[in-house]
Length: 298
Image (cartoon, rainbow, N blue to C red; front, side):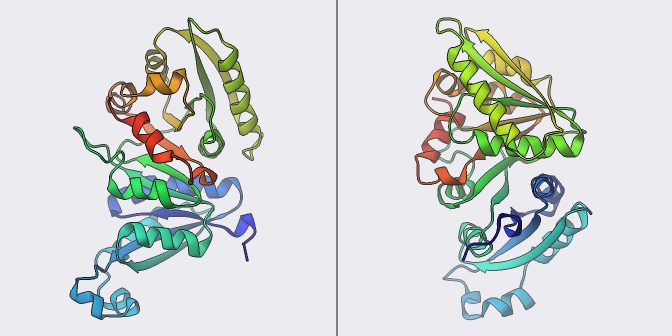
């Protein structure tokens, strides 16, 4: 039997104490938006071929937890005081299996994980673990770039080009803005040779998603800019903001322009916090392929 939405936690998976504060802060913002709960999980891996496979999960948690307890202690220490926080160590064959199990058992409404950018070409978009989570977890997924934290948040940039992931992108933008009394700036770029009708539709869709996100007091502004190079417009505007929130997009002019340019021109050349969003109800679709096109050079 499904839990009421308010009882479904925002799950945050923490694998390094040094990253706990950044990820738990975002999870706390999301939970606060709907008076929800943050559930912090740390995974102790028990490979099938390991001698530890002879022990029960309870024994491993009690006697051989590795650094999982340290991770949880740090995460709880930095968690916001005004949000209910739960924590759990899970034993699993892999980090992905553990997180996926935690999402299913708790009926999590959202999962927050960290992503460390990798130099050079690789078949992994966000890292092997995160790639698998993108494909598997049936809840909204927020992937936050690790190590690039905003020192105060006054403005959040939300570039939009339609698609099913606008909803979760609007929610996390609203959650962060509500906590920090920040402004959300919606941006859609109209190619010079195609007019602005589609861009207006994308902005209207984002504005509706922001209205439905749960906090009517958050300040928002919207702009449509014309540009022959969509990515150049986004890069120029990105430097005016503290946090960048992206949802994967449908095939469109913006989507095609983002291929290869976003990682070089935005992600790798800015110090802003970057959060990538994927809607839970889109998990059955070709999400990973979209992310690969979105993030990797062609």
